[in-house]
Length: 331
Figure 1 (cartoon, rainbow, N blue to C red):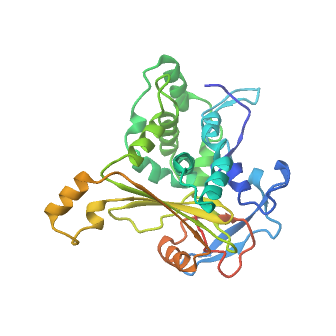
Figure 2: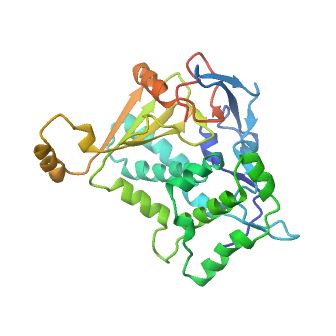
């Protein structure tokens, strides 16, 4: 693993913030995004932090968040930046391609749907405000070690490497140093390819999730003409309550978001037919993916608002909130 000089490390990529920027056509150093503080979760009230917005370079990032060995004297550090960039580089292209294809009714959107899911799920995995949830979701993975000697040497530096920022970060995030180190080990095991020429564990898990024939997978894309969707500092929202189904809602663009639903068909159809018929139908059914697009669908927005709540500490968005822009998409 190569060291680099990146110390300001984003847990929500700059390219995703650019897609929500107030001035998306500006030079990279001048990109700004409006940031809102949640002041009342029950009533969905937000407060604009700065009328001029924040610079994207400084927003949704922490110094040395993912650095596990800061080398003396030369400004270099070992971190996961190169691994993250693998998923970040295609976000803008895939987002614009997906929305363009849906608007011209082009059904060839499989690669966009899959690659965007991977990039968006990465935001959950690397989110510093979700460390406890991430450790619970991938329980035990950080207890394993790579078998490749070179990878094992890098992996051990997560514990032994110099991390002068560790105590400060843990205090700021409200987590223990053990949780922080376990999270870094988990990121290593998920994202580093452990066998040459083979996908990493993260990509294998995504493939398994999307291709599980016992699950109905759907991706619902909502695009708006006037409302503005917010970008949660958690990286995602839950469009439905916890239960037998799993769902993620992700910001796509200043005017669009996507819901990925992983539903248990037997629960969805319970009581609609005899257990025997359901068993035969589910055994015979083909795995399917549904795609829908909606333009300024106020009814859908209202339903989404009532179920998702505000899971973020702060939210960033593309425009100063109108009466409804603050809840259009709290991802």
